[in-house]
Image (tube, rainbow, N blue to C red):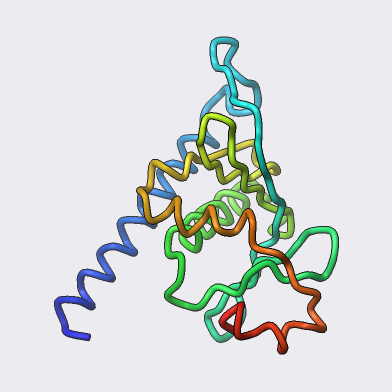
Length: 162
């Protein structure tokens, strides 16, 4: 990878981090973040999934089911930068408000086509489409990815890219 490609990658990551952190801070700082606006109509959910986000020592991140020891997906260090940086921003906000880092996140697809990443513990949500087509494509796949029981992970590593 050339120096210009490395610089471009670092700038892209920094941009996602700044946008994600700004969006999360705006949502969490809003005085009405916990109460929906009367004029705001939320579209009905078509599909949703709760998950925990666990960063491993080697840089990978495990997306785990909340109700069972099942792996949804293993993110490689350079995979789905949007999700990694946005969750890092959400975790930062949780830390500022002294909330548990163990609470699950929620990914939902609405009837109007909006894909939302939510932090139920902070009553905040982000529209993934605000971060571009690639973020939507990479994140929406997680809604339909079947989870794997942890004991079966080595056999499923070819699918999960462990």
